[in-house]
Image 1: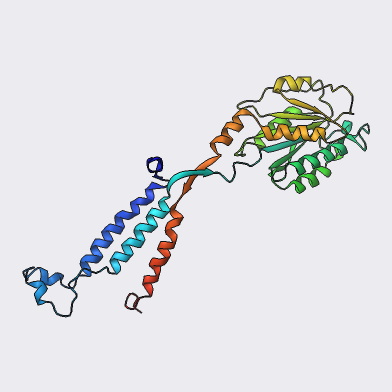
Image 2: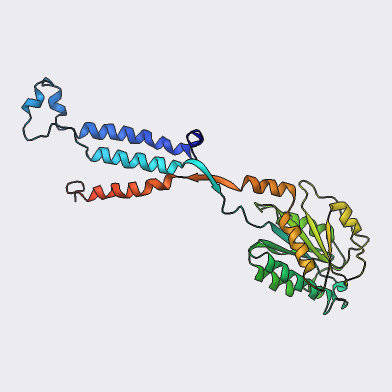
Length: 306
């Protein structure tokens, strides 16, 4: 009874195709009656006794088979459904927009070989741990630039990150606000939410960071400063955007912490994931073998004329 109460069609408008099917079936049945003209002039009680060489029993003819095939096809395309099943995209990892700071300070060698190189190494580990997740890459200095839109190909993201250097940035400075706005736009097309990962050594005191408009996007910061040193310089961003700051470590502890933050997402993204976690299982494909059997009737002698 539960399945019966949940029965519905995913695309019910396709059932309107049954209307022309019924009309054509009635016209075909009427035109296929060889005795139609005699029924108008001979008494129906006497007519059966005046027929010679005809089978008086009802037969299923070509119009009937055509109508049956048409009706089954319309029902199959309409998408009958009464059960739910997990969505194949339910377990997809949230997308991430990676913001990489590319300034002369990132060439400091206190994180060997440089802070920028260590950022690339950590990014490679993060991409490997989140294989298949969509990742966008944004570089910023005095201006912010979208290097690569969101893509599941982590190798391309890493190759472009290796090509970035302060020498190719068109403007000096730290325009973090523009980079955050660009990252949010890069995540706008993501269906399962997303978050922002900032790879930077410091945030300048003159940087203006305003709370994001609309739905807040989770922000994780990997502070590229030497291990066992006090993390400083991110308080403004942390307070304004409720960011999570992760300190750089010599092992993989920082990578694990970043991946945990990126995979968890925010509450709004989790709610969207629950809504997308299941979908109706269409049963129309079960009618396809029946349609295939009906096509065998076209091989009967007399059904197709050349």
